[in-house]
Image (cartoon, rainbow, N blue to C red; front, side, top):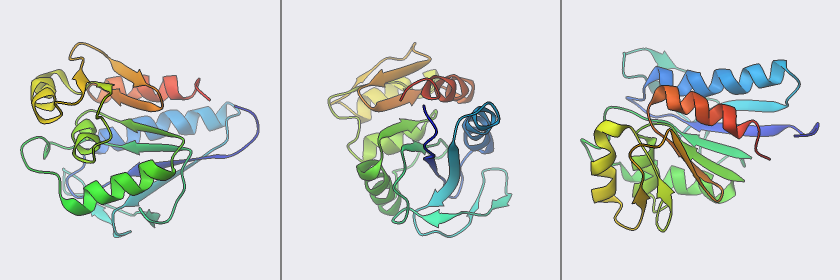
Length: 175
């Protein structure tokens, strides 16, 4: 990875799962302790702080329009696939993905990537309980329901939260 600092932007929004946020963040933080050079930042569509699925508010570092990340992660929530992905979240995802060197989703964050059209023509995965729903909503994608994580070019998707940790570990070994 060298000595260059790489920005990791994690897109958060109201209702996001805490473990989906902190698990990959901890992996990047631990990589820093071992000599990597990541700057981890939480971003939301507008830059406003967000309320997690458990009711705790967390501070956000920036709006989605601000950073140009090396790695962009969109994390999951119980909201998706039960409800449509809001337009501002889709646009924030497209904005960040358009400036990122690599794009990844944790768990049901794949539904947000799918709503933004970022899984079209790609292989992907998500939590096994909703993989069939991702396949139905992202017909231009090939969903692999039994995968821990999938890499298709510079796009990565993971199954559940523990698979998101595995994905973050793999991202640390990928330039």
